[in-house]
Length: 141
Length: 108
Image 1 (tube, rainbow over the protein chains, first blue to last red):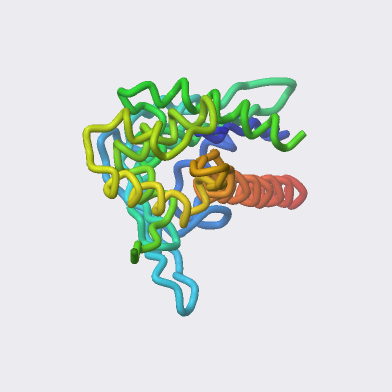
Image 2 (cartoon, rainbow over the protein chains, first blue to last red; image 1 turned 30 degrees about the vertical axis):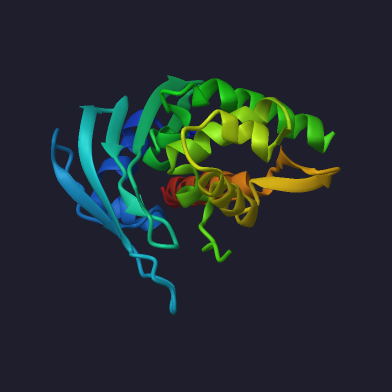
């Protein structure tokens, strides 16, 4: 079972160009969500989106800039709620690597608190999880 | 006995239930054998079992006089679904970003 999301995406544009789309509110909005992002360490900001009709889903993601290295790394907290109203905390990290006349953009979304509670339980839940995974895989075969 | 139905996150929020699931991840166990490991009354153990059963974390099978609990994957699906949701979310967003950047390049 995965407890983090990792994605690697290649863009033909330079890291500087991709960086703009990660750090300029009006550009971020074009592909992600409305936001009031500011590229300042420790800055709190929010992503907002329209909740679906009839859903309790809160259309706000609360964030705080954790790390910012121009054109190479950006990380912020990502605290939101699930469709059933459960609050969760997590972290999003963007890493830009100049490659083949373009940019390799790495995304990591992890540290989900709801899952940490399961995975880091002192009673050895972690190892249990591995066994559970094996169990599941064996069942599915 | 009326037992409320809890969702997957509520089920695993309880340390005793987590421990029970952990034990069951090693092998199927009877309710009695499970109960021996916990400092709580047998009805209390049964209540936890019922909660886990209702949420799809375990199945219960009667063999002779004993009731055997076995781990089931359904309960964990909800948690996996949470991760899958974000996985899809980001793939969609990154595709959008790619299209945006490529369109911008064409305009030049």
